[in-house]
Length: 334
Ligand code: CP
Ligand code: NVA
Image (cartoon, rainbow, N blue to C red; front, top):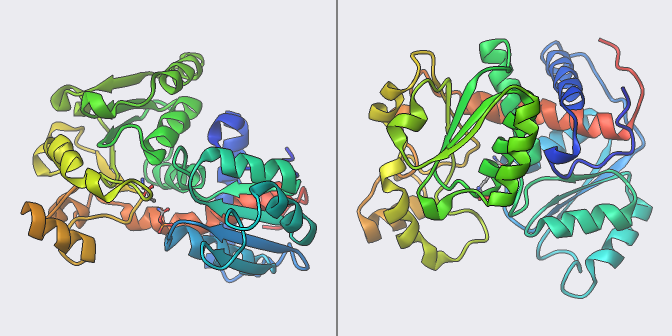
């Protein structure tokens, strides 16, 4: 299988076998790194990382993966390029495409990363947009596969803002991989209908189901994986916090919720997470609204069931696999 020359903009563009191929490659890269086997397969190539929103995991994963593969890596943040302010996305893409062999973009509309890909004509990877977070999914699927040994037939439940980038991507990832997906959210935060319809269609061919509900007990029952994310995503207005807290407080992942799930249920979160008062925003929210833990309690976050740092670790080998697969069709030595 060759994915050379492809972009990685959203999982809807990928077939199940292609995702499995990337997961296999990820495991190989993870093993090579653990065993100190050098893999500078893309020496001489260069990539650029465009970040219009902040990042720890995604940026570091792209940088380390790029360097491990022997590539040159340029990082540009919102304030240090002409993109958008003095130069259109189209022109920027054309310039970058002439200098680099691959482009990562994290920022706002999905249309921006789609446009970059269209005009740059080199593999372009979505490092998070308002709509989707596809590289996160490959890291999450690897984490799930490592833990359970398989994907098909598992029950994954997302609790929280059911229409954010991570929730959207999880719904697509589950439908593609044969995982039953339940989204538990208040009505106001249900995923958009057109995406649910698309995912239902995919799921019906893959022997799995998509369910959207506000009922926690019903939604959590039989879950093998409970996944949550922040209540307010990057780029959303500050003023939305109060409304979101009121809407999502009953949907916090806590001991009571975990007990409603399957005994073997694990907890996942893409991170960063507000589970204590050790962040500036966490403290501000506490001072304003009196809550010290948001989408997940500190107890669950730090429990044995929580695999959140495995997820974070898996971002790097999976991003390495995504870049390698789309930039080269050489087989790798194991
Ligand atoms: N999960 C994730 O994308 O983390 P960063 O925002 O730190 O990149
Ligand atoms: N939904 C979150 C994900 C962060 C990785 C955000 O967009 O801020």
